[in-house]
Length: 219
Ligand SMILES: [Zn+2]
Image (cartoon, rainbow, N blue to C red; front, side, top):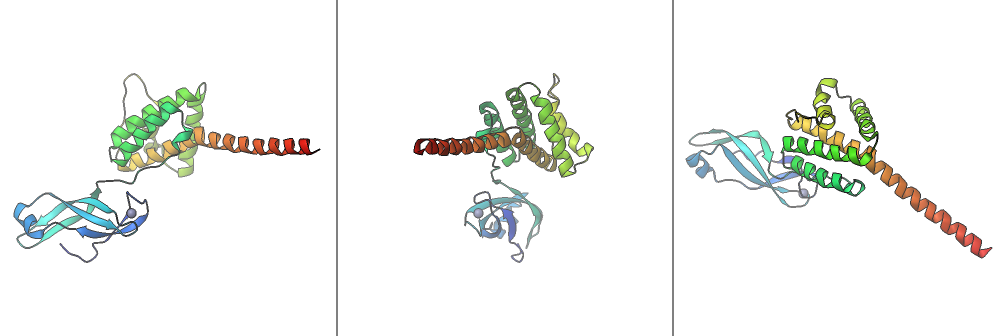
């Protein structure tokens, strides 16, 4: 295995920083040549936080004197997706946490199923007209992101067409990434924005009432 340009830039699953990863533990070449595995695991060290990061590579070629790996790899631990869950209704929060955990584990179709359940529970919590409002938010997100209708169709089906036949389109990594951002934005617009604003206004009102009270008592 060559040792030049074997550093990798990656979002670290531990510290979240996009950091250089330096090889820390590399398989024994003689053993690879003898056993000819199809995949090889390497441990890298994050330059930012020093945590060990595990990557799996497919083997391109093993000859009697050298091992060549493909440059693509699978991250065995993905950075955790974050969201201000406390603003979500309890039921939606539970489902959306599981959705993001599926996404972080590269289980994109399990992620899509959990997005549908999270969305359905959010629509119930939003009450009358909630689903339509959420749909409008998603259309705005599509327009802002400039995503064409064909690429966006599976996202709409997953979120809004929960019907009797339970049809769900299969998603690849790219489409799952779009779904992730659309879900976060939809929940942000429907719950987080409102929750943050009303908390902030409550605090303002508290201080105004407080200072009015002080004025009244000192008068
Ligand atoms: Zn790190």
